[in-house]
Figure: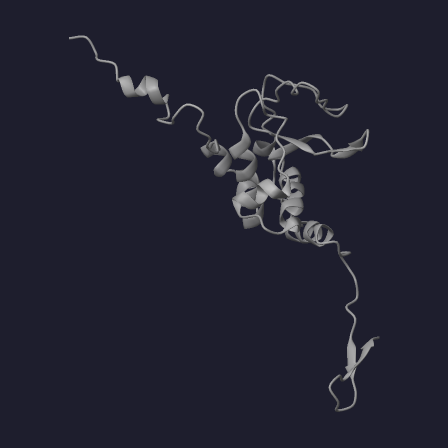
Length: 187
């Protein structure tokens, strides 16, 4: 007896998704990797935001400005910037173009997911000099080993993203008097 084809399969695709519908395509082996498990929760949101933008022929052209990041629950700019730096440090993403100003226009930083091949840049876009399209993924995350100083280095990234130097002496205030304001200021 001949096998019947499911007409719904053609209409929705192999994954059962409607044509043009977007989803975050994140491989299970990446989710189970040491690099992914070492991420803080705010960095996981950032990688999910980048994954939601991925589709074939676009890896390397992924950008996540703060206005788009807010859709994924990243409400503080420091979480976005620290998340991107942490993802780079864990080799889950690679920066293909650092953001800069060119001809009076601000150009966003672009990123590639390292478990997918880096595609050709979009028309009018150029990658940084050290980056070129590659038909095979680098899979740098698979060889990443959690450093012994991982937690302090993530804290350092957070401090820089918040705009504070890492090792600053905290100012101490003294109090005096019994009026409405009792502080003398920082010493």
